[in-house]
Length: 440
Ligand code: CAA
Image (cartoon, rainbow, N blue to C red):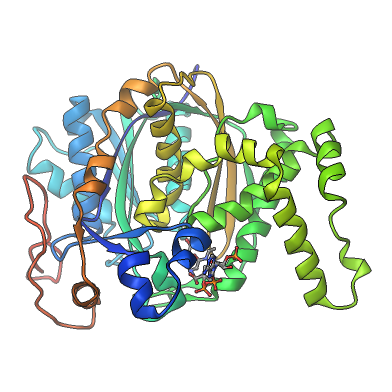
């Protein structure tokens, strides 16, 4: 089998936007630059009151199936990856399949459905499962739908409130991919952690500062593990670096670490050392705070070098253009980063067929996964078909008072009637609960 990978994707954003520098920052009495420069965000996509993980996922799938001319008979698997699940028994994929059966001929009665959970990582795991299902020859010529969908809301006044988001990506996996082919090799960095969790609660308990360190540790381990099976990977091997993006500032940190690894042992590492000196050695410091500051200053100096800046602007910056506007979509975030890089290349009319991306996924709790993807010849047409930029432009811009009401409307244990801010257009909407408490 030549290649297995992503044949098509569709992205669906929540229909509302919270403007972080102009609406959120003033109420929080914080500088807009904390959001735009520090976290790297301008807005958070939020769900209107008739949207949830099922409607967003089903709408992304509907658009994908219509565009690709697919019917339920073409789809042998539907896996939903989410950390916003509302049912501990019935997977969200059954709800999504139920929606799709209302509008497409045929049914999903011979389609294997499931729900995957490992925080933000599980979409990548579901793609891996789908690829292996095809490689094992169990697909009977059919493709797999992986749906990553989340309403990433934090408790009001939690520091994570600045990094919220909501949206879905439908990803179609086949043995004749048009967008990217996935490497068989993968690296894993995994350790039982409590950086971010939701034990029987809607909103997460998160140790935000520690979660940043845990992310970096697991990604570093996954990169080393990947190289242990795939061989050393160098800067020149990597056209783009789509990483899990809870907020672009997080990727800024992970990218610096990755760059130093990619150039390790090369002339570029020597050139960098001449410009900024050796990295500070922890053993040379008695005081942990003094070491932290020396390390921070050294990293800042690297970021200012033309060597680093040129690499970052070409390899990392393009992966952030969507997430800057959407906030964190949890399971969707790394898939938004891939789409973002491809969209940027398409907009600049650069042919990147044959080039490789180093894709880094992360889920709190905690595990990172690393693999490479090779861009396929048909990528440009697929990416040109995406409407995500138009969708982002069309979002309803919430006032702070409206944001408070929307947040309440999406809080499970608060009953509040809020009028929608937008009008649905030929799409699935959440209309209430059925007799058995199921969503409809
Ligand atoms: N101008 C420019 N920059 C500014 C600034 C200003 N006026 N004010 C602050 N900043 C910078 C800060 O220096 C900081 O950048 P550095 O980390 O590079 O120094 C950045 O803006 C954020 O400022 P704070 O650290 O003060 O922000 P905070 O205390 O409000 O919290 C956070 C930030 C911890 C990330 C919080 O938003 C949070 O808890 N988020 C949720 C957890 C999360 O996303 N963790 C990421 C890893 S875990 C993961 O990836 C899984 C997942 O999806 C959740």
